[in-house]
Image (cartoon, rainbow, N blue to C red):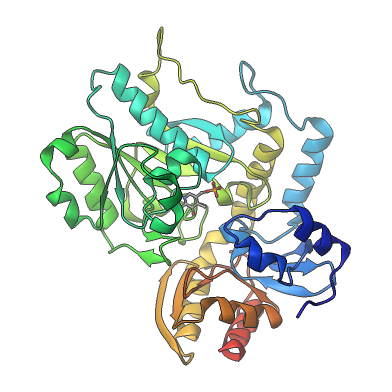
Amino acid sequence: MKARRNKWVVADQAHAWHPFTDQEIWEDGDPLVIQKGEGSWLIDTEGRRYLDANSSIWTNIHGHSHPEIVAAIQAQAATLCHSSYLGLANDKASELAEKLCGFFPGTLERCFFSDDGSTALEVAFKMSLQWRQQNGQPERTGIIAFENAYHGDTLGAASVGGVSRFIKGYGEVGLEVYRVASFADLASLPQVVIDTASAVVIEPLIQGVNQMRPWPVGMLAELRAWSLENGLHLILDEVMTGFGRTGAMFACQKEGVIPDFLCLAKGLTGGTMPLAATLTTGEIYEGFKGPDRTFYYGHSYTGNALGCAAALASLAVFDKENTLADVERKGSFLEAQIRELPYVKEVRRVGLVIGFDIEGCGQEFCQKLRERGVLTRPILNTIVMMPPLSVTDSELEFLVEKLAEGI
Ligand SMILES: *Cc1c(COP(=O)(O)O)cnc(C)c1O
């Protein structure tokens, strides 16, 4: 059945190609065309309202069109949209680098900007590997990663990821990767693999794309100790967990861990603009000084002033609205309500990130939710509930009501 197709649907189905999408099904479907955002809500071209229950694929933090972030973007657009970051600085990027490093005084002292989560990871991998080459450890060329991890879709980042359905089309192209399932499994790696690895990379506290699976409490701190003992860099992929999702500003703070590389993106601008940052230590930075040691990496839009202005405004909103104070309460309320629902098999949660399993019907269930004014995207049969941190109690009640109806 084809519903009324407005001109945007027609143009989309004729010309657009969507990410992670079976286009054959899409072309026969009934796509929503979003036109407006307001707080926790998205509004389509037909004027229908939907609660954004996955924060627009895990990016939004303070709600859509937050007035202070909008004002910052507007003011910045009227002043300077973009200037190259190659050989030039800009005021907003300077301020943001200082602010981000300010969360880790004396440890993560340097901020390298890029464009999205995948590139934040590419930067960390390249920095780690190049640092080894020019600092007397050229044999350290491997990356140790976790099974079912997700680190992005660019070729290098994808090759490190462990979700088989995402990487099977590329064969063996990519980095030299060794995968383990758990912290305990590190012990079973041959010593030669450990001695020739440059870094270990992990999504701290919870794997997102792997159906929202939390790691055992304390595992991150153990991994940090192990990486230090064995001389490996620790790369934390906080693309999803960063900026308050877990209840702390950064997930690593919950276990008192400071990595060698911290990768940030999605929530950095509050979910308004593509921007990413890779934070690293003075030790790594110093290893790039001197002749023939330049880090040859950058994009046209690196250090984009609009993105940096949005990020600064988002960080200011955290302070002004005391955003972090309520994350755990909202998350545990939602978890408790979901546990009351019939047919729910397992509920997994960290902060305001929840995954719950519904046997055999993830896609159908999300369609039922959409018909009732709630948007989210399943991962296989896991339903993801990750509303903006600014979600109100009455919006959470609405969400629970629609989940119950959908079931
Ligand atoms: C989304 C995500 C990425 C990739 O970020 P993009 O901005 O989509 O490139 C990497 N790692 C994690 C943990 C993510 O959730």
